[in-house]
Image 1 (cartoon, rainbow, N blue to C red):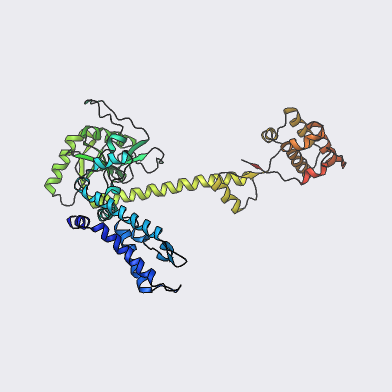
Image 2 (tube, one colour):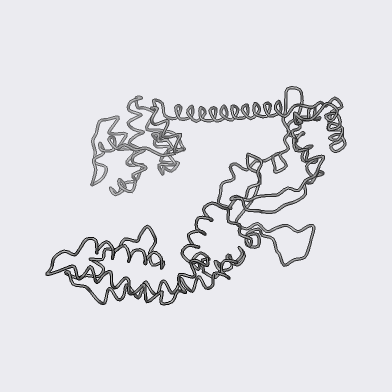
Length: 458
């Protein structure tokens, strides 16, 4: 820090920088004789000097330091005094700002996270007020460390810090919720994040689990939290400290009893223990758990090694996954059965699309009251359709139903003829049964109805 600051307090530092840039560019300009191209080495020297000072002063970043001095300072081979002078002034002003930042570094460098957060609230970024070398070091530090916002709890936790102690006080959750994830880690969630992944039941920061086995029910409490209460620290997403509390043995014991009932068990028959626990200590542990949990620990309860316990837990999780897959398959098969029944001959591609979109296209059957209502037919018009179907052959019935369905769904178009639906139904019947081809409106012949394709989306 002293070395960098001493660079700026050297006598005539700024005037020397200005003179060096001016001299280097002018030497290159003088090498352009009678319109000839300037000396390449002088050009490179001037360019390197201008780029170096632009980066050191903070005018440009290292990755964007290139300066084309022919474009920046020359017009048709002639040196532009105004543009060269403006560039030198900008470099000196930037160096001056860097000197001020270094002079205040004794204060800025000691700012706490709280001060930095306060700057951010006021619209200022702490890193913008660091000299170039310190800014680069700070950027690298932030990339490789976790930034802790000490004001975050006051902002997001919902806790009213102005109130005194109240054992019944609860935080006001606005825009967030929290819960244990599948790995039993307390996790902070924004309100718009789906609930999927938040575990229920015995999972929790305490890591205690109940596992139903072939011989009864096993208690998994390798950390012995039930018999040795500990302080539980809760971390939100991003390793942000959310809060802490002492594990509540009574509450966890009550939760265990509730969970036992939910899985249809009355007693705990096995207790998982660390493989380092000796035989004598195992008996003491069982006695300790009996003291805490009472009669829900079986009189014949035994210990299970942690490795065996984890194997049982993994097996049960696999069984649950298989059961879930079977349930999903059964649900999909039910949907396929419904689709095949509603639309005989449906192709594999149509099935896949229907399962993905939740929709299927099937032809309306106007002989059904529900479909007739969809097509906008009144009870009287539906009765006319049913009556007209009776004398028709099967193939004629299909043609009649299709034409009536198109008529109903396209009534805004076919209704322009001025006749009622009942009259059109009669004319469709006459066309099919007697072979007459009477125009039903001034725009479209009746026969056109039979070539309209109509699909209704569920």
